[in-house]
Structures are given as structure tokens and as C-alpha cells.
Length: 104
Image 1 (cartoon, rainbow, N blue to C red):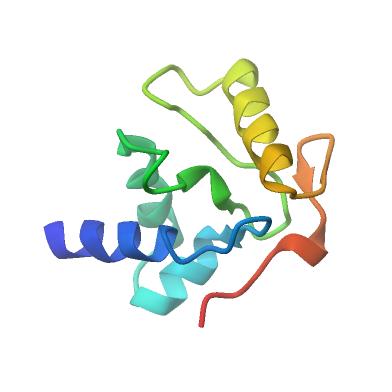
Image 2: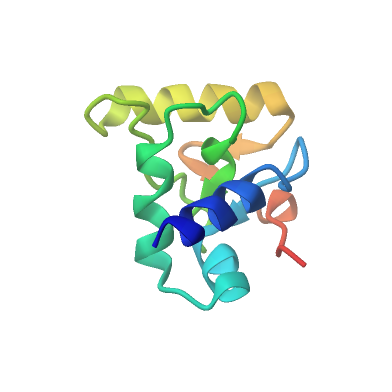
């Protein structure tokens, strides 16, 4: 199980600045369930090193962002601001589809 954590964290570092990827993209790359992918970044204690905020739902919705706190609207606003600072186009709580990349 620990190996999957390391692989997911490694993939997080590969997401280009100004872009996001989806839980599904990471899951396909590793052959695991997207829900499992969503759980691991929620435990990320180093979002500055492993930018878990650059992972969104397949429909572009921001999904969740816990940053060690309860996942609520205020944490989603933090995620939104981080993405905007990265140059990602966010409208409401959705990322524009042009900013979503499939991991190779």
C-alpha cells in the first residue's frame, strides 16, 4: 500500500504549473480506483511539495481539499485560490476543461 502512496505523490509532482489532472487520470495510470486516489492526497501534509490541490474531479469540479482541516466550502476556496495563483482558469468551483491534462 505504501508504494501506491509514493507513486501518487510522484505523479502529483508531475502535474505542470497552470494545469490540473483528475483523480481518474491518476487512477488509470496506476491501475487503481479513483476513490483511493482521492483519499491519499487528503492525507498530504506537504502540499507545497506534492501539489494535491492540482487534482480535480473528471467534470472539472474542484472536488475536495482538506489541508488537515474539515473539507468544507472555506477549504475549497483555499484550493481555488491556489489554482488561480498557478494560472488555472477556475469559474465558480470548476476548472476550465482546457486546463485539465491527462497524465502520460
